[in-house]
Amino acid sequence: MTSAVLVLEDGRIFRGEPFGAEGEAFGEAVFTTGMTGYQETLTDPSYHRQIVVQTAPQIGNTGWNAEDDESTGIQVAGYAVRDPSRRPSNWRSTGTLDAALRTQGIVGIAGIDTRAVVRHLRERGAMRAGVFSGATLPADDELVQRVQQSPGMAGADLYGAVTTGSSYVVEALGEKRFTVAALDVGIKFNTPRMMAQRGIETHVLPAGSTLEDVLAVSPDGFFLSNGPGDPATADAPVALTKAILEQRIPLFGICFGNQILGRALGRGTYKLRYGHRGINIPVVEHATGRVAITSQNHGFAVEGTAGERFATPYGDAVITHTCPNDGCVEGLAGVDFPAFSVQYHPEAAAGPHDAADLFDRFCALMEDHRRPSGRHALIEENH
Image 1: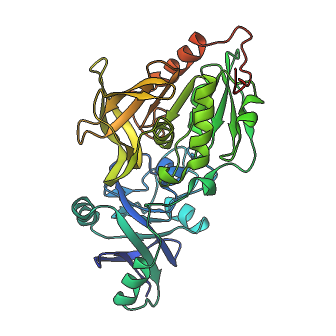
Image 2 (image 1 turned 30 degrees about the vertical axis):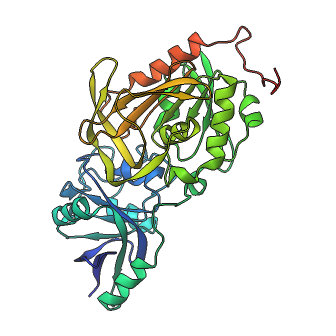
Image 3 (image 1 turned 45 degrees about the horizontal axis):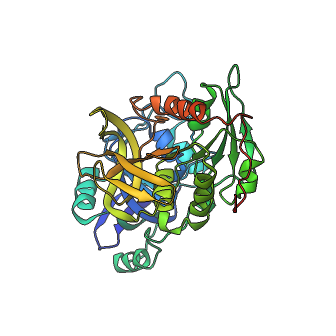
């Protein structure tokens, strides 16, 4: 008889039954509070090399479909649930969650007390973990040792593993209004779709792209996507962002993109105790007092305090948004230059649509900063 265990690096072990593929997987154990949207969660590149624990007890009720993937495949390292659905029920379903996990080789575990796992991670913090399943498993001490020898998330350089291999274009729907160069450090499919609905033609570029690559598409704006790993490792995207800021090309970033912009503006980043992951996380916009319920998935954050104004090489900037739960920075904006970013996911895949207007703000920023020719050209260093 096969069995499965979730092993945490501090020695805590949870025993259950195999779910999805059998074998072993290593990653950072994190939890997400979303009650819906498990397919979008599993295919979100920001979850690369993480073992995701679902706080909602029943998972898989709506099966799996061909429409809701947010990337080319499942991105998580492993998956842990309490009560998987035995039979999906949804008119769009084309298969089961279990089958999708097995087909894509994702090792999971079911039948564990996910409430206990979540309480443990909240108290001890996100940590290295392993999911092991099979007819015979090594001794517990050996499994713990193997988990402890696996790489951690701090210092992890992961965006290169999820970026596109070559550039591609997502056409605008209807009349084209703007051209945007989007740096793919883990972009979700729904982001260019949201831009397309607003008349934006999006050129999705690999993470290693240069300023010349960006300028070659004659962009009206530049977009920094979400993505996985430690932003302290993203030296190349940070350098490119600095060049974009020098060009005064309107810039919009989300999630990992917020951290990249923060680093480009001279701010530090740090690892959160257990991060923000779910579709019910409040964010306060300080200029208006408006509170949005947002979709989030991040384990790192930008240093700063609510409403803080600070100097950068490009002019003053300000901390525009924070999370009322813990004071975490949720947004940045240039005061004297055209750039802004948020730590959450306005593309809402999955999640509430409270922040969808940020794409409209990006359009307004591009409109306000159009150059006479409508195109950006390289500014000479000595100009």
